[in-house]
Picture 1: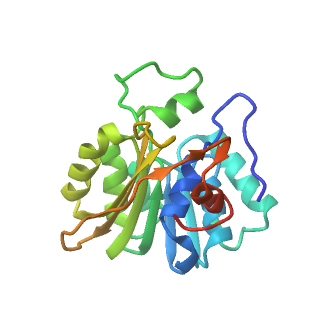
Picture 2: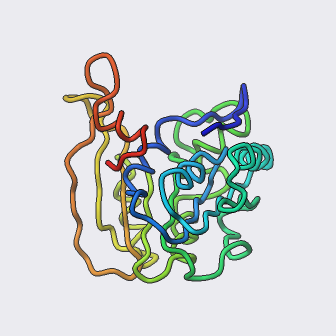
Picture 3: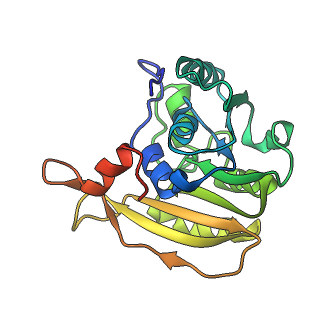
Length: 230
């Protein structure tokens, strides 16, 4: 896969790869939406790693939308991937209600009043909830998901209570969670969560995932970069 990125704007990190691996895309063949798709990395991974029939990425920032569309064309995926420009609060403009099997999202992690906002609109909007809160992303996911459809997201461990409460508020039941640690013995700095719309309670806590081992990535993360499930 090849991806267009801004030299000085937002650039993707490990997060979309971990999210794609956590979502177990290899066995997926339904319809998929990425809320806040940025430069289009997750839609590209979903197209490469799954048999998804239809993949829609929704992104607010025009420059990112342009790069995502160019990346889709560069990889010859126009027949399976569509990038739409709009806010997650406007998801009904692009996706019919309860029509999607899987929603992926790597939303902004921090509230506007939390920490220093990164310079430049792209990075600021990618990291802070400047135009879409966690609750907005969860409401959008609940709108498009079928009953039994899955939501997979990556967020900060410190906001896990917000994630769980927000999911339940929109009838998405938390079903699976995995903490991500930089190394053994270090605190978790990411959390991966899966929920199902209109599902019965029952949460599986998976073993911790360690990103680094020795001088490089752990075997699990190496496998994830090659398209394997976590």
